[in-house]
Image (cartoon, rainbow, N blue to C red; front, side, top):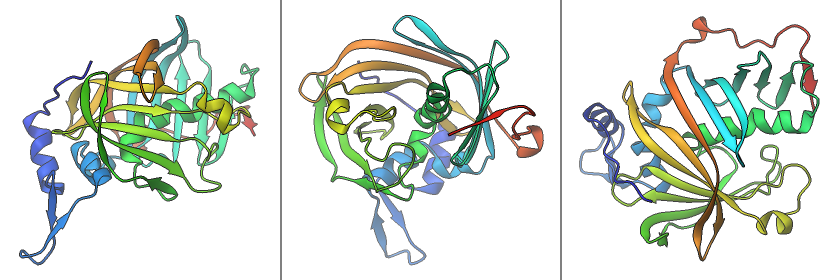
Amino acid sequence: MKEILYILSAVAMISCTQYDSKQQTTDNPSTVVELSATQRIEAAHSKTAFLSNEIVQFDIVLEFGGTERLNGSMILATNSSKGKIVYKDGRELYYDEDLVYADTSFNNHGSARFAAYTWSYFFLFPYKLSDPGTNWSDEEQTTLNGETYNSQKLTFGEGVGDAPDDWYITYSDTETHLMEVAAYIVTAGGSTIEEAEEDPHAISYHDYKDVDGVALAHSWKFWEWRKDSGLTRQLGKARLSGLKFMTEDEFDFSALEGMVKIK
């Protein structure tokens, strides 16, 4: 399923000004610093250019198990500090750091909090690899569904995020270093690590396009995943459209009056 991804010339030019795909020079031209595996992924995704913008907005239609889970717009701070989901039916979710607000039509507060953080995290994931509290294994080359990738395992420090026991295994292209697949477990909702590891999933990123010098995936697929057999049964999909960058002056991130704080 692996796609050979080529970034448009604008992306390549910007990425090269931030990082070389394999090395970075310091102020001393004779000194060469080897980039880490995560830095190569960040460079491929033009992290510096992405973070130079304040807000990213896009429409998303997401299905899981044949059921539409999300149809609306997502407006996210590029530094992941806050975000809002505006559903087509008028419902809204809003998060600001560790606080989540929802309008009163959300009966299941647990699923609302999950939605507020999960879908935004999948979108922002390539830009959060160096967040405080992230712990990475050594990079290795591995095979997934017949294709070779660079792979690493991500775990989190104690107390990091809503579900610090979650882990991810990333699969990036060996040449472009773009993120292609991330396997993961979900412990949110009270599952133990052992229970979550009995049913690991994965997200695969597709249809990368240049948006103002940044490579952004325009479609996702969700899978059952096993370390030995790889991606097995497809569980869901998402289509992203209308991706654009904005400034904070163009959007009001505040919670609507009457929204309920979700714990």
